[in-house]
Amino acid sequence: QSALTQPASLSGSPGQSITISCTGTSSDVGGYNYVSWYQLHPDKAPKLMIFEVSNRPSGVSNRFSGSKSGNTASLTISGLQAEDEADYYCSSYTTSTTLNVFGTGTKVTVL
Amino acid sequence: EVQLLESGGGLVQPGGSLRLSCAASGFRFSSYAMSWVRQAPGKGLEGVSAISGGGYDSTYYADSVKGRFTISRDNSKNTLYLQMNSLRAEDTAVYYCAKDGLGGAQYDVWGQGTMVTVSS
Image 1 (cartoon, chains in turn blue, purple):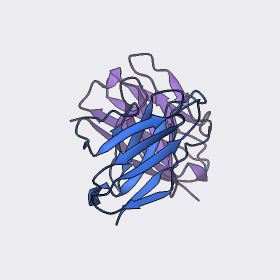
Image 2 (tube, each protein chain N blue to C red):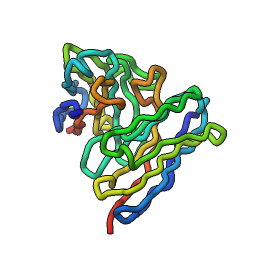
Image 3 (cartoon, each protein chain N blue to C red):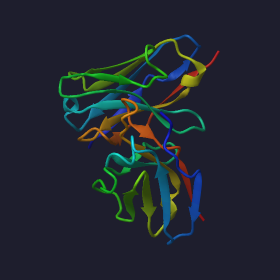
C-alpha cells in the first residue's frame, strides 16, 4: 500500500489561507468518507484536526476545514496563525490493507 | 481528561526485543480499538498495529512487522502493549499509542510517543 500523496511543504503569511491536498485512489480516499487529518508539533502528541472528511472534533478551531473531491481530500487553514506552523498528515481507510494509510506529510510554515 | 502515556522505549541491538506499554486513562478503555503508529526519523507516519475493542481483541499488523511484533491489551490495567522481537535498524522510530475513534477510521487521542532506537 503506497502512502497518500501530499505536497512536501506549503507556506503562507499570517491571516492568509492555505489548502493541503491529499491524493489517493478509489480504494481509499475516493471510495470512502473516512479521511482524517492530524497536526504534529515537535515534542507534542499528534492532534486530530478533522475526521470523516469534514468533521471537526470538539475544541478544534473552525479555521480548519476539510473537503473531498474524487480521489483527493483537502485541508484548508483559514486566517493562518503562527501556532499553525506544524506538520500535517492525512489518513484514510483503505481496502488495500488492514490498517489505515497515511499521507506523506506536509510541513506548513507561517512566514 | 483522556490520556495515553507510552513507556518502554530505548536503545536495543539488532535482533533484540523490547516491549512498549501504553497506560490509558479518562475513558472506557475496554470499549475502544487501540493502535500503534510510528514515525521514523525524517519520515512520515506509519500504522504499525491495531487491536479491536469490545472484548473481541482481533489484531492487525503492517506487513513490515508481521511475525515480529505482537499487540495485546490488558483491560483490567487499562494498558496496551506492543511486544517487538527481531528488531531491525529500520524499526527505529518514535512509537505512538493512539485511541481509535468511534467507527475506527480515525485516531482521536494520541500519546506523546516513546523513542525506539535499534543500533549496535
